[in-house]
Figure (tube, rainbow, N blue to C red):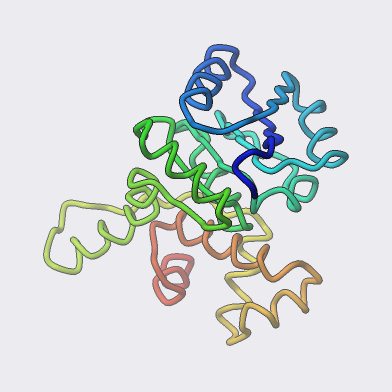
Length: 212
């Protein structure tokens, strides 16, 4: 995109103070922008599905999931910002093709880097997000190396997550499971990742042993 062109930017955060903070950071970047700020979820879905944007900044503040099917097309252009409560949903959006994923605790520098990456059609994950993704792996590794005080937290799987885990255990690959369940390949990958996170596991063998 040429430097003199105007970027169409969609910013969605239900909290006015957060929106103000996002706008402030955007204003510090040397970019020509026309910003649209819906204040309700329905408005956001309408803009996301009916208009074209060069950049989307989407805040995920709680555990209630968004309609991923509606926003799938804009995810590659989306910077996902999240609070601790919305972290799991944010990881799912990144797995489904989000352009950047950043904790709201990340630095202003990281925020700008994430936006620049998405505008250059690159993917970006801040250090806090990377640590979150890797947390369960490192905890498991600590146990393997002799730290006996950690006990993995097991959370109940949804019926779909259990179905995917069971099919994986039969030897089916991700693409084959997608065909069997008539869902997207990326959806299977997301369900698998969510199951492993809930079980505090890093691979199929550990997950099946925990389920058994």
